[in-house]
Picture (cartoon, rainbow, N blue to C red):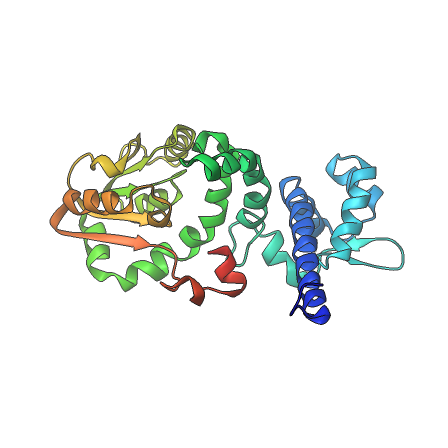
Length: 296
């Protein structure tokens, strides 16, 4: 033990590290349950043994059995004396209600597993600088972001956020030229197009698979005549002048935030409105301690 180091203090920190490791294991197992529909099956069909759940989902019983035991050990599931596992009613909104207001069975799990693909490339970037290509993460990460932000756009954007911005809402109602920068798979603009039929909207993103997915969703929703998506680097300038420009959880991820804000400013009509939704955290890193600070 190093000079000045207490045995109790070291053991306490060791317990914290072990708890973090246990949490990482739980998140990985939960990601399996999310992606394979196990949580949703337990929510819809009720408790099951490993054999029953494997039969209901078409998966291999040996793996399902271990997954159930692991999730029960982590406190995600319950287990009765007969060997059947259930999803508590209080856990259903968090794990099984897709796009619900409390749903976390998306980015929290997806990020922690999908982003592992970039680990070795991230080590390289630490040594030599530069970035990690978005293509390395693959379209599944773009889908994860869409799932993570879905509750915002399904439940908050039109009924909650826009009433707080009456000038922007008035422009949308009258018929605005709208640009969403960093649109991803396009869910926000789709909701705006459906809510404000007089407006014309364009979404910009640097990731082509997201543009393709967004375009297809707009076509299926029947708003493709007023809503389009373009592969475009908005930091180099917007493709026109707009009454409303939006960024949803984008600015903090920009490689050039000042350039992006400048382009938005220059692309706004003199009476236009910029709608920015982004992380709310303290300016000083030491004021961002704890679980949320760790995430931020």
